[in-house]
Structures are given as C-alpha cells and as structure tokens.
Length: 194
Image (cartoon, rainbow, N blue to C red; front, side, top):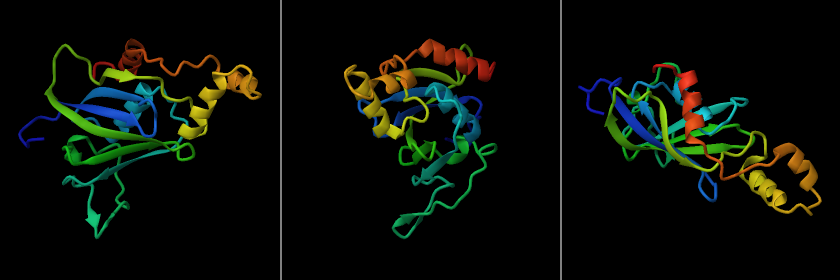
C-alpha cells in the first residue's frame, strides 16, 4: 500500500479458502487496511460460521512483508505478532505474501488468504463486508477435513451403520449452504458502523 494512503480509506478484498476442501469452501471479504489481525480472526469466524471455541494463529511468509523472512531454505516462524496492534496495512500485503490462518489445532482448519484487490472505501458500504463465497464451512469438532468428508458420506447413506449417530450430531447438514445476507447481518452486529 502506498505510504500516503490513509489505511481507513483503503479497502482490501481478501479471498479466504479452506485448504483441502473439495469442492472449495471459500469467502471473499472486503476489509479496511486498518483492520487488526484480531479483528480479522473475528471476521473469519463469522464468515465461516465458526464459534471461536479453539485456538488459532496467523502465518505470514515472504513477499517483502516486514513480519516474514527467510533463513536459508526455511521460513522463520518464531516471530510473534500482537493481533491487537498489527494491521493488514502493516503486513505489506502484495501478490507474493503467503498468508494463512489456522483455526483449531486438533482439526487443523487451515485458511489460505490472499489479497485480490485494493479498493477505495465507499461511503455507502459498511465494512467489513462479505461479497461472495461458496458452501458451508464444516461444523466444529468434526475431525478435520477428512472427518467432515467421512461424515458427509455417511449422511448420504441412511443404511450406513453410523448414520444414526452422525445424523444426531450433524443433523440435516447442507454442505452447499451459504447465506450471504445472514453472514453480513452478523458482521454488522459485531462491527456496527465500522
């Protein structure tokens, strides 16, 4: 981001996808450049419809970001970021920056994040805003992507010996469900007038 641009007036459109999902589970969100990593964590929780029940972390690598560097052939990962003070503008997001968000270290939901566009803030838009996406994120504590896929297979076969307990746990889960209006309503409740 050019140094003379006010981060409150600059908007990043971020593409967030859930690694190993097939077909891809993803969201596109627009956030101001002064959004902290702590706020981005909350935004991702809302757009993926998670419930903040587990630990998480961010990893930023390469592309000239002041928070990422290489040591020999390996990426150094011991740099701790203060999520409440580090903003997206601070990360130096460009096309070469590799950016991930991992939620729930047991199930290991790795979200790949990349900056798609840089936009000017619009007065008639309440940020953050989800602008697009596809499919429901898996439910909490389902055993990672592999456990989720297995659960979907079981739900597709009422004769499966595990159908009853998986149905009791997941209910009538619709993996194609994605409600943009509902997500944006929740974003507006958590970030009113942002």
